[in-house]
Image (tube, rainbow, N blue to C red; front, top):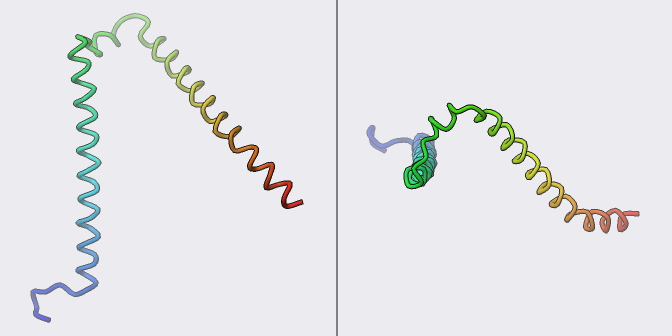
Length: 96
């Protein structure tokens, strides 16, 4: 092995770091693409979120949307858990 060749442990670490860097870049590109997509539709619909959020009632609307989103998520979670219930009952009866 020459002085310029990395040792196997260093090579493995370098490969892990390069893979991590590639993953970070991919996530950054995905986030950028999603932001650009949102911006495209806001521009297309002629909406300016800054001016909308400065209007009276905007904070109340955001609060209502948050509450609605929380309710929808709770209902979805309840449905998921309810769909697993028959399997859990079957397992409990089998273990008795």
